[in-house]
Image (cartoon, rainbow, N blue to C red; front, top):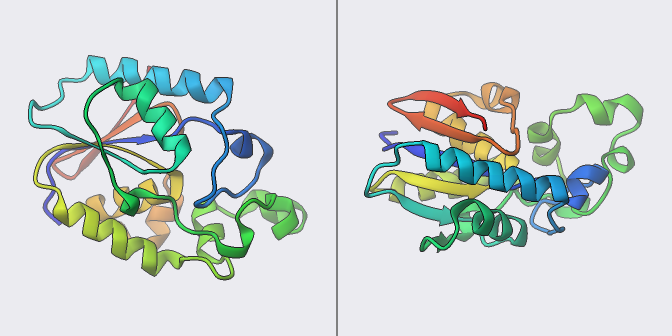
Length: 188
């Protein structure tokens, strides 16, 4: 997959992130920390030399819209449903420990957990829509999205297999740049 530069921003921490709830395509508000993380992303973006033809693309879910407002300001952005988080079906809104017993909930990576959700979208569905989004890009892009969706995007851009994608961290408050097949994580 031949791509121009990508600048990936995961939404800031939400109330449900803090509680350990699976959000999927449901929403909860950003916490104070989440708002601070988005403001840190604004600082990082201001320090980067973004190409003049960069486009801005945002998942239409509330937590990404709020993050984009804080991190990007008033730049014109395209809201694209293909950037939404993986659908977690019956598990959306539930606590991790309600789904998996004891320490298993802490050990299972979010990528794998979402992939197994009953009535969920699954990794094949997520990959199809992320691949379609990436193939439509014709300019460098700043993208505000979600943890599992960004792991899929990074994996496709870097040529990783599913295990490699699952092992990627999905830190909030950073900007992940992928240029010429190499990844750089920018922190404030």
